[in-house]
Image (cartoon, rainbow, N blue to C red; front, top):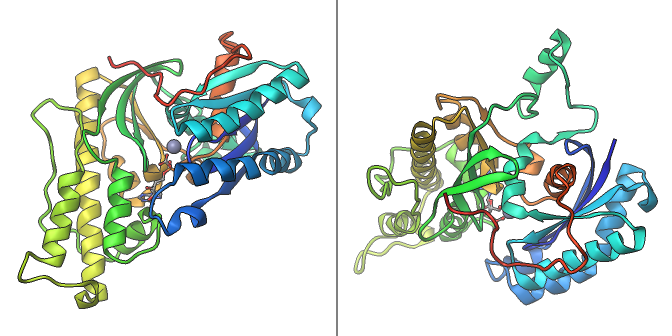
Length: 362
Ligand code: KG4
Ligand code: ZN
């Protein structure tokens, strides 16, 4: 077996994890910074890098302690070296290089977006069922997110606060970009609508919760399809439509105080329905266009209950990560790092942090 330490610091979470053979998560430690950025309602890069510096060593230590292993038992170090905020990336990359050099172990360079797609393959230690025995299948049904058998090519959807894009996954190391948002990421739209409704940041989970109790047909909101065959997304028009329909036009403005609890739930439900609809339609289109055998999803918004439920209506099997691996984490970095390692793709110690993703457009 191979024990991989994964390190993640691309944006505002500092995370470290120990994963066995690319799938079995022994530990996943995360230091979130959201309180630091809350009052700005967005990530402030300088504040993020400073917090990464403070958090990185304690988080790595925590991941080792949780897994109950010593540094010297690690077989390799994987790090998310792209895409992200340059000041944030540098902290994780520097820590990973230092460990790889001092332990004399391979360094694996992981693309964070690719890792979000790979996160469907993760399972908690003791929960991954191998083989196809009856007992295994029974356990699997109670754990629908641990994939034992994934049929490629898959259409991949990464939807988070920073990314909303579609991919064709031919293999874990052969992924092509087939569509992306032309303006806001869907998570960003969630966060902005949540701010309008006076909800806490990040707003996704809160809107998801309220939406379950609201009427999705209360507002007539647009679904930007961007042409018959387009696989791109647009969410900024939707956000603006919510603003005008809820708070009115000049001369007839309303404020947050004018909204009842029922109205807030209806706005949440209507907004969520529009997002889910747009994502569902584009994913269906991509499955048809590329004759895909399955769908994999990742990123913070893939934790959305409305989205997961709707995706069960797709014509091919859908795999979503376990809830705790939807948002940024290091287990997915260690997981994909294992695949890179098996493929002989270790990096040298002059590895760079890069702000853009490595995934090519098809
Ligand atoms: O993947 P992530 O942790 O970080 C980025 O790479 O952006 O995603 C965070 C985003 C936030 O915008 C948050 O509001 C959204 O994911 N999110 C959700 C849910 N949980 C998190 N959006 C909708 N429904 C959810 N249940
Ligand atoms: Zn992410």
